[in-house]
Length: 367
Image 1 (cartoon, helix red, strand yellow):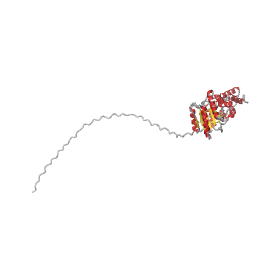
Image 2: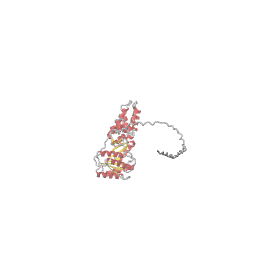
Image 3: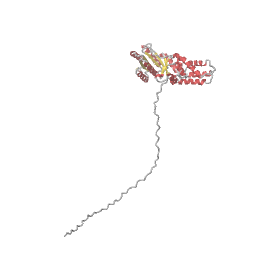
Image 4: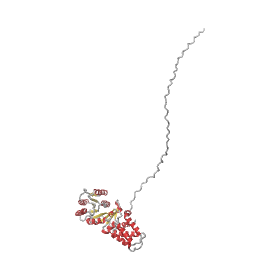
């Protein structure tokens, strides 16, 4: 008979404790800061700078010809003269009054009384009490000036004596040292062996300047201590020039005023000492005149010729004065050869004297 199984005892379920979640209090959050609205003004960015055209280098200025530079250099002198001529003779008859005004103009331009009277005579001949074109007066002026200057237009040449001694004299600031440098440069370019004697022993700057010129052209410069005896230095330089086979010896001298007797005596001593070694030396004595000194240049030419035996003239600084006519007055009075004139600082601004070109330039004609 089937056995009746007993029913299984009920399994006790484990008790699960459900913990209630711990409710935390919320952390207080501070309110956000107030929003500040900042109004910004809008400005448009600046426009870009305009494009610049490419930089094209300018060509180096070309040196004008000598005649053009001469005309420009003498423009101060010519404008003074020709401006007055135009004012005097425009629509006026030639009479005593106009002739007197013309003569005053010419004398004020330092042409000298003798030359001025000659020009007046030429202008008045056959034209009295008639109208005359100012251009005609200018032409007469140029012709008469050329007549005075043509006989003294003498190119400077380096002679065959060896060494050929050139003594350069003049007052302070006339441009002696610079003129020596330029002449030395010309001589060196022609193949001559050149020596400079810096006998302006009173100015260190003069010695230095001549030394610089010597290095530039390959010339020897003989110098001594500042204050040394200039005559002794000239003697030593001539002796060295003979030993070295120098072709041309330039002797610079201290600038001196022609009215200072003791300075002129010193120059006379330099000449005497040179002659002790070579009786024929100096073979050339060049007086450098500053055109800006005007009538004073006449006195300089007079005294330096008596003391040093000037053989020729070089006039500088014609581009810096309205008194260029003084060269005409000097030529008329002394009849000394005029070798060269200067109208600038460059080497090629010192050129052989051309009487016709000078006369036309001072009369205002542009060739």
